[in-house]
Length: 56
Image (cartoon, rainbow, N blue to C red):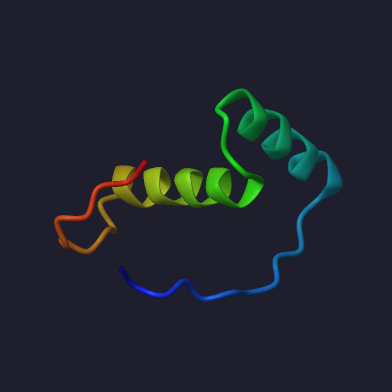
């Protein structure tokens, strides 16, 4: 498994609140929810590398 790279994210408080609520509804952490959102956005845009790795 690849090591995850930490980084700072500045986000509008209302957006963060929405992500936190969505994450709780999906039984994910906020970080896990953001990863899931980004993964799906990249997949839908056809920008994921072909690695055979599936998302959540």
